[in-house]
Image (cartoon, rainbow, N blue to C red; front, side, top):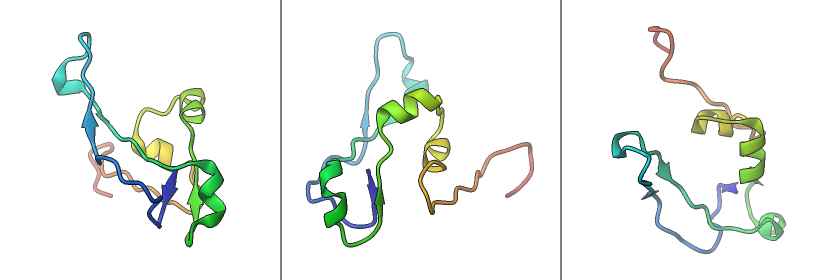
Length: 85
């Protein structure tokens, strides 16, 4: 769940999870967002939920690809074909 308002419970911002078959230099940070869908109507700002099932089914590889699924969020890639954004 992405929110402009705090969800009420804080968690460590980033946790790196490295398995035996994943080299540390390629490990992506694991981000845990704490919140429940039932609390969405109670938030003061806007909020949207992108579930792990939705991300797995749409085969997103980057955070930018996942955030493009959130209404009202515009993502500009900083990397590309040698061109500046």
